[in-house]
Image (cartoon, rainbow, N blue to C red; front, side, top):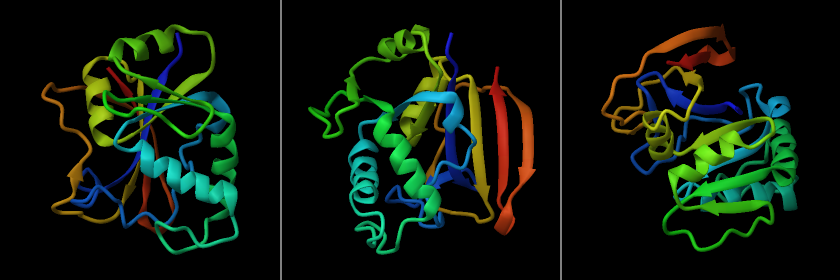
Amino acid sequence: MRKMIAAMKISADGKFGNPDGYADWVEAWSEDYGLTSQIDACVLGGRMYPGYEQYWTAIQNAPDQPLPMTGRLAAPAEVEWARFAAQTTHYVLSNTLASAAWPKTRILRRVEEITALKQQPGKDIYLMGGGQIISSLIEAGLVDELRLIVHPLLAGNGRPLFTMGERRLLELRNAQPLSQGRLSLVYAIN
C-alpha cells in the first residue's frame, strides 16, 4: 500500500498560519521535505486549493515575474516545484469545490476515496494541507508519516495545525537542524 505523507511548515508553537491562514513567516513555498522523488500524487483540501492553484500557476506562467500573492520573485526551488506540480496528479478533497483549472486535478468528495487512492499502485502520496484535512486524515488513520519544518517563532493567535480530539503517538525518524534556526522533523504516526 502507498504511504501518505503529510508535510507542513509550522511555527514552534504548532501554527501553520496567521489568523487568516497564511504563514507570512515562510520565505519560499518550495518542496523542502525531500518528497519529490518518492511521490506521484498530491492531496489537498478544498479551501487550500484555489490559492495553491493561483500561486503555482503564476510561477508556471511567468517564473521571472513578481508573484501576485507576495509581490516577490519565485525562489529557484519554487520554480522547480511548479514544474513538478504541473506534471503531478492532484486530488482535492472537498464537498463544495465544483471544478479545478489544472488538467491533472481530480475532486474527491469522501474520505473513503482517499482510502481507495492509497490502495492503488504507484508511489507515495503527499498530503499538503491545509490544517483541517491533515487533522481529519490523521484521525481517520490514513496518514503514515509527518514531515515538519519548524520555524523559530511563536505565532500566537495563528491557526493550529493539529485540531483532532484523539491522542496520537509519533515515532521520531529524523531530526535535522536547518538554516535560519529552522528544524526538520520526520515522524512515523502510530
